[in-house]
Image 1: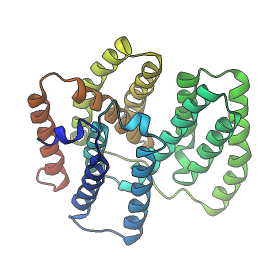
Image 2 (image 1 turned 45 degrees about the vertical axis):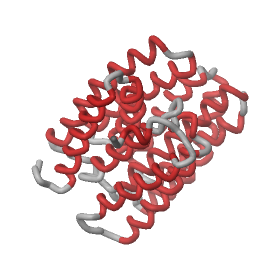
Image 3 (image 1 turned 30 degrees about the horizontal axis):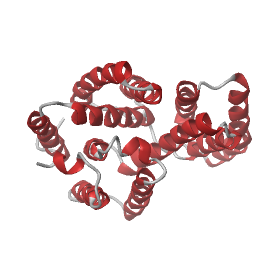
Length: 288
């Protein structure tokens, strides 16, 4: 069965994950390539994401001897690509995951550099979709408050690093008219899958909070807020960033649900049902 190959980490796990990512990219572009620039950007961001998630970010992606988060993320990324460019999701994933890592690193080592790097990275990410910059800031500060429990001094340090970059960047964006992409306007049918999965994720969120240690409790809260807050931003305001972090939160909690689900065969069946729905949507068998 497919999920059984990703329940344990062994010498071949990295090869399996890399192969699954290549298959996901192949399915994504099987309906046609819009531009080679997007292909190059997507492959570059995808390769960086795989490398970082297996090295620097391993603690959150390779979950307790399980790589199931890769499978859930790839499945949801394929669903994202039905409506959006895959490079946008990969970019947001990298920005948010790196900020999450810096917040956890600060909690362990009390490093001021982690604060400054986070503020700078968040400001630079405004180059992608400048109209969503405030969503970046709010999300990253939420990560820091939940994960590191930072003080006022730390928040001021973060804001200083952010302002030092965002002020000249804002001048550049205003002159170049960098805002070139409008907000999303998705039909109800596309959101139906995420709504159903969110119910499962919220149930797992409660279980994770009640049974996990302090570090995993903070992670479950952050991922749960990604689902709730990001989903609200995407649904009500048409935010690409909100929809992206909703998918990230779902990948975290759904991976835990699959891992702790006692009836593995039923979990496989449910996974295949979601996979079938995603493929049907991707190839427009049932148009929205």
